[in-house]
Image (cartoon, rainbow, N blue to C red):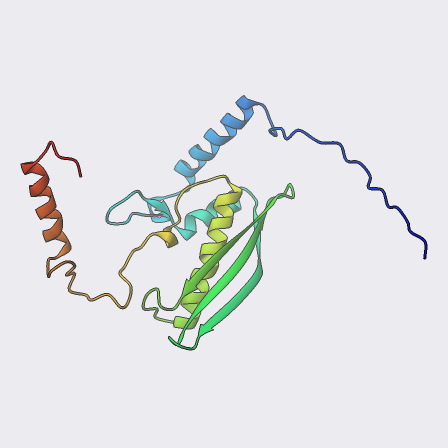
Length: 189
């Protein structure tokens, strides 16, 4: 048996550079922000009871069309928990641009997150929506929170009477904290 020495071809190190000048990149980002203003309508945003409005699924899909992005499901797994009788869908989606750049993102949804009208379909669709919206947002360089990540309703196991601590409702707790902070304004939280 003879030994062969395999030499690797040396690849020169390349300095990573922006795809355009500073001015071009800043202009492109401003154009993206302007596009969101004219393309997305109020229906494309979700505004939680407390917090900043976030882009809905419809808004991310409009932006994907505007930028010519394509998507595909790369992997999907349904995990069943025999102890709880619940399952979780995990879906990985790849979004690609016309220039060949691609981004992958994962979305998951468990049937214990909330009460679904159509458990099998809705949990799968939610996991897919999360993965796809995240991939689109990532491809476009957006750091905005997704609608699907905002807690919009309490988990199915939480009591509906809105009683939190020692029988106080959330509103009563906030009012008590507000009054206490007004009585002692110089003290920190």
